[in-house]
Image (cartoon, rainbow, N blue to C red; front, side, top):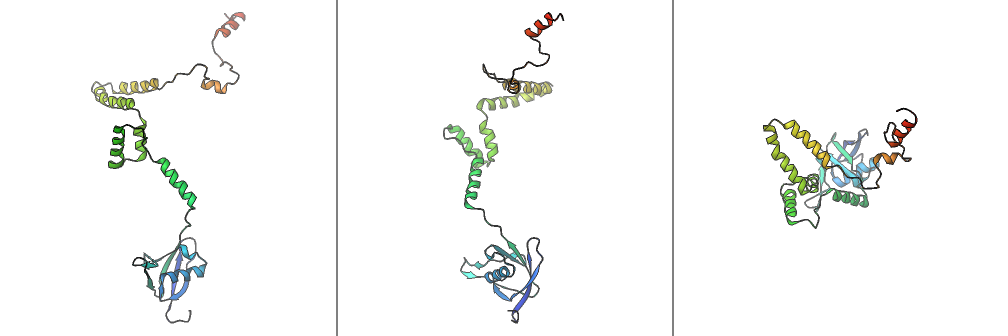
Length: 218
């Protein structure tokens, strides 16, 4: 092929830390044959090669895949070559799909009709993200009523110049409403790290008073 007058010499540039190289190919060649020439010269996987000539990706076939595409090359043309990565294994793709499904919000089958209509409006019409839908539907109806009431009373508090007190009161109210009750017999958070149930230094109780009286400190 080197002595053929119809051959041309082109520069092949590979994506990555590889120096460009020159190769002689026919002036008019099929894209599939051009891939094989490049792959054979550098031991590249021909099935994963992408060729770019003059800023356009070369396709092997056109017109619905019925005709082979031929390109005409000239001396000094630059051909960009990219090796496409291997596709992930099928079981990995299935895992990715499962993870995507887990992140999507699905309304329960036992939801009421108005929740279903609200979900359809927010998800299908307004196209809200799934994270926003999770935040909306995870809040109870009483909590939403409290939020709406808070925003209704906020302008009143601002008008009476008690905005800071209104915000502070809201913070204390949220803390008080979220205080739980420890069931009888349940260990406290401190008791988890205090295996011997030793009292804290400086604790004032009946035993401490009795010891102080006996020691003559009172």
